[in-house]
Amino acid sequence: MQAPKLVILGRDGILNKFREDHVKEPAEWEPIPGALEAVARLNHAGWHVVVATNQAGIGRGMIDMAVVNAVHLHMMKMLAAKGGRLDAVFFCPHAREDQCDCRKPRPGMMHDIAQRYGADLKLVPMVADTQRDLEAAREAGCPPHLVRTGRASLVSEAEIAQWVAAVPGTTVHDDLASFAAHLLQHEATARFAI
Image (cartoon, rainbow, N blue to C red; front, side, top):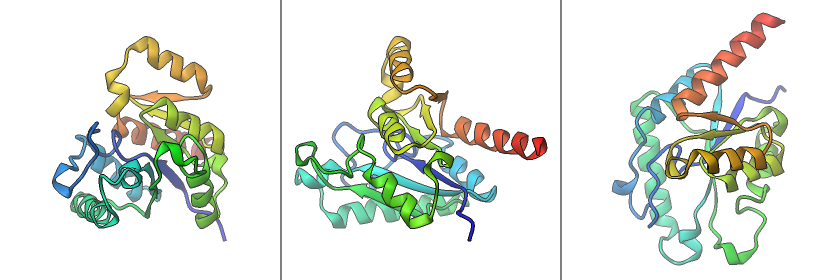
């Protein structure tokens, strides 16, 4: 059986607007313009989209599983309204001090995703908005992609250049819509090159 075409996205700052105080209820999950449509565009081209997100608010006692599930249900409904879907949401519930293997920049979540889907992570693009998540992509062996939304929109060009230098091979995009267009164009070019 052939592994599916798979993309891994972070959540906050990529799909929805980043909040320093965490998304604590569904109403606080606000999509970034064009992000939901980008997921739908990938889906319609045969790509499976999975989220890998650190949710330290659980480990810190700021939110519980019921809230996380309600937020993700809201996210799925908003995506469905745009014709898109996520295949799964993987999340790390631990705080930084827990020293787990699943909290990005460690690669545990990506390895779990690869195992679930039978995927070779060298063929699974990972989209980030932080240097930490780019490092997670590198550690997992995923092609790293940075979108200039979320936390990446808050830093200087010089800092972005440092992130890219720290994770060679990173491709930078304006937003998730630009990433989707890039991926689909790359796929079409590769198909015609065969």
